[in-house]
Image (cartoon, rainbow over all chains, first blue to last red; front, side, top):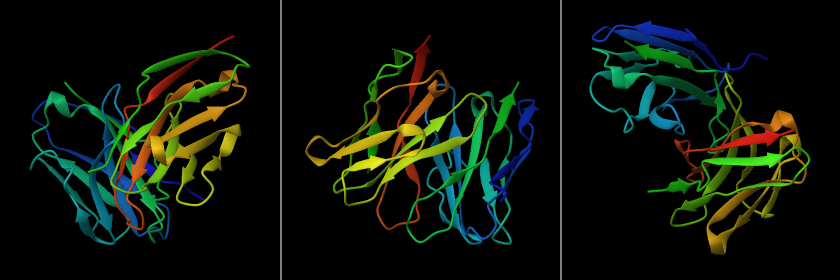
Length: 114
Length: 114
């Protein structure tokens, strides 16, 4: 079956612009996670959805970052007024819930802010 | 809050040699423990996980890990590495029975000498 997909795979944008990153989870997975991986670092948690609602957004670095999951499936991570420090790989993961933590990761979107 | 330490940023081993990657965690109880592998340009792949029970866990690709409560460690091992094992390896922890974020270490990059 299809895994987690993310689009675009690469995004180059200018400082100050707005970007949207999309995540398509595995069908039927109710939990969805966004992580950010900077060069030479491990993934850092951003936000977690259970269904349509954000169950934990404690990892969002500031109010320029926002994510939605309106129908409980596809999610979009939105970054306003991008800064060069936002350059990273943004990873999405999904899981079937139930406390198993079996998160399946997508290939990521590499965001470069020039 | 839980945290993960991977003390080795880079490890180099010869093909056919044995491997051990170190991981220490900080958490008030026994967490869920994971090892992920990330090959260049690839997404994160789960190698193995520990939830409870037998402290020696077998994973994919011939990897195993041992949970040692007294040392707060979860080291990854492989008896004989292959050139294709060259990748970045991440240890991670999660809080049991919660669909929640997992916390990653900074990773260990494994280099294989022919």
